[in-house]
Image (cartoon, rainbow, N blue to C red; front, side, top):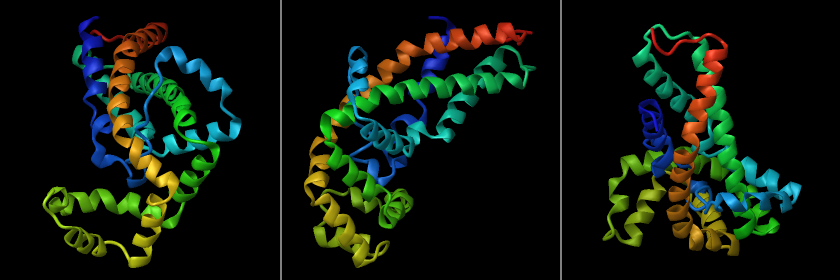
Length: 235
């Protein structure tokens, strides 16, 4: 692996958008970080019904890892590596890099899709989709990261249930809390909580493995396009 390839791997693996759970919307704490099948089993995605695949893809595309902000962050950090070799790098280079980053991220998304089929039925996915599109879920998506930052006591294992409830009441109405509680006490919500820890462990490992395997190919495609368009990475 070349020096540039090594730097690009480090950029992607260490990106705050990849592994920082504080950036994950509340609804995806149990949902978005699902176990990813080994690459050899990706072919099973073709067996998933069209409706299931659309629900899964829509859910994943709302998560930070597959956002345009994430793509642009990674692309800019890669451009910074190239600019270290050529400060006068053509502005066209960024467009090429972000196109390849998007393409690579979508391939990762396609690997994740079969996992939802493994863990959730179509009915469960419909329930998850309905809740994630509700007003209360959108509010939790906005407020939870702020609440975690402003209320460090939430992480204290000695905090009583009553103390935690008082913190939540500062940010949400009783009706909103009841709605969220009803979902996560439903069979689908309990299932999400049950498989969550296993999901998070395995997805991190597989995601990093994917980055290691794909970074060289991404770099090669970028450099090939640079050469074709006469973009120099060295003065």
